[in-house]
Figure 1 (cartoon, rainbow, N blue to C red):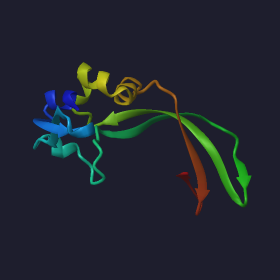
Figure 2 (figure 1 turned 30 degrees about the vertical axis):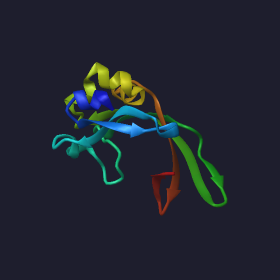
Figure 3 (figure 1 turned 90 degrees about the vertical axis):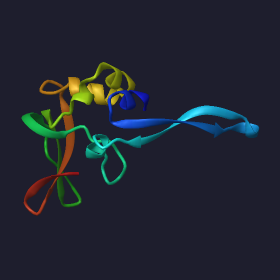
Length: 124
């Protein structure tokens, strides 16, 4: 969280936290900055862009289970609207999944299960 604070996404206010047996520990209370509020979803997660399909690489053979067709599609992606703070080394070191997603753009092979519903393939 401190990396997001240094990046200007969150504000870190020092607080004292009561722990085991009433012992006090220093800590921080984090709140979104005005800039950070742009990236907080209604669910309370931090959004760092929107994935966009670049290329479908392949798909598994379609199987039919209980009358529904399924497959798995393999593809590459790009992240649209990627903010500068998501490119910071300290933020990427703190959030390895973010780093992996950012660094994997246009070459990481991703997979998504799909189901055929109402004549259209949809994410399962």
